[in-house]
Amino acid sequence: MTMSKAAFTGLLCSFLAAGAAGQISFVSNDNYTGDWLDDNSWAPQNPSHPTSSSADAIAINGYITRQGDLTVNNANPVITVVDTLIITGNAILGSGARLNVPANGLLIVTGDLTTQGAFNLGNSGRVVVGGNVSVTNGSITNNQDFYVFGSTSTSGGGGIDGCFPWVACDPAANLGDENDLRTNDPSLRTFLETLNVLPVELIFFEASTEKETIALKWATASELNNDYFEIQRSGNGIDFEKIGMVEGNGTIHLTIHYSFEDRSPLNGVNYYRLKQHDFDGAFEYSHIVRDFFDIRQAELKVYPNPARENLQISLDDRFINTTVQLKLYDSKGMVAMEREFVPSSSMSMIGLENVKVPGIYVLHVRNGRFEEFGQVAVAR
Image (cartoon, rainbow, N blue to C red; front, side):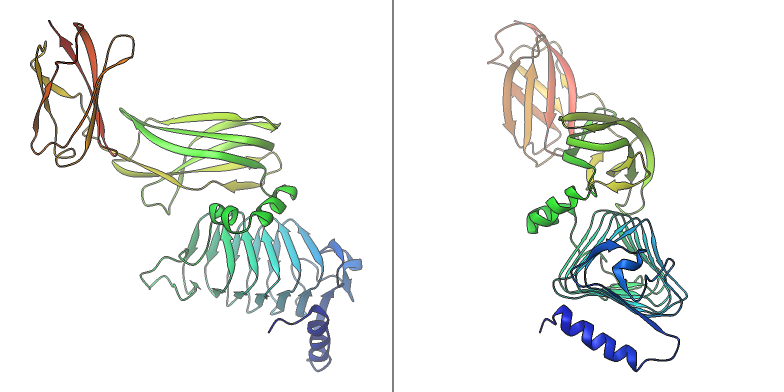
C-alpha cells in the first residue's frame, strides 16, 4: 500500500515526539521547491551539511535540491525521499543511516554514489546516478527503477541485491543504464536534460578495428558547457584508465562528430567509454563499447601473384568454418568483385572470371570479428 505524504508526515511527527532527547527530525515542506540548506525548505530548520549529528529522521516531502556533494556521517538518520531529492554532486553515505525511496519517490545524483559504514539504501521508486555506484560497506536493495550511467562495484562488506564481493554475480545485473532509462522512462530522461544533468546528448559511440589501431567515433546532437572528453580503456570492462583526451565544443546546438585512434590496443577484447567533463568540473560517462584486437594481424597472403584465372588465399584459423565476405577493389576504390564463402581449410580458391580489367587490386576479407587486407596483380 502506498502511503500519502500527509500520512507519512503525521506518522513521522508521532515517532519523533516519542524519540530520544536531543534528536531532531527534519521535514521538508509539502509541495515546496527549495534548497537543502535553506531554512524555508524545512521544519524546523535545514539538516545542514554534512548531515547534522543529531539528525534522527529526514523526510523529503517536496522538491529539494542539494547543490554540491551531500555527505552523511556521524549520524544515523532515516532519510525518506517521498517526493524528489536532487543532488548536483556526489552522495557519500556513511554511518548506520538508512535511505528509502518509496513508490513515487525520485532520487537523482548527478555525480557518484558511494555507501560506506553500515548505510542501507532501499528503492521502490526511481533512482538515477549520473556517475559511478560504489558500495564499500552496507547495501542497496532495489525493487523498482535504478539507473546508473557509470560503473557499478562492490567491495568490503558491501552488496547490491545480495551480490557481495565474495559471491559470483554481477552487482549491476538488476540495475539499468542510460539506454534503459531512454527506453523505459523517456519523460524522466527529458526531465534530466532540463536540469542540465545530461550536458551532452550523445547520438552514437562506436569502436572498430582498422589494421593496427582501434578507431573510436562518436557524435553529439547538442552540447552544454562541454569542456572535453576523456577516453578511457579497460581490459575487463570494470577497471578503466585514461588513454587520451579530445576537446569539446562548449555550448552548441549542432551535430558534432568526434574521433580518436587507440594506436596501442590491448591484445584481445578492448572496452572503451567516454568521460565527458563540463567547465564547472561536473562529468558523466557514456555507455561502454568494445572491439577485439588480434596482435597477429598481418598482410593477407595470396598465390599466385600476378594471378590470371584463379587466386589462392591463405587464411588462418580465425576464418576457418566462418562466413567470410571477400571484396576486390580497383585503383579507383570501386568494388570489382564481391563474394561470400565458408572456408573449411587454410587455403581457399577464388575464381577471377568476373575481373575483366588487368591491374593492381586491393583484397579485403572479413568475417564480422576479424579482417585482413592484401594486394594482388591481375593479368590478362
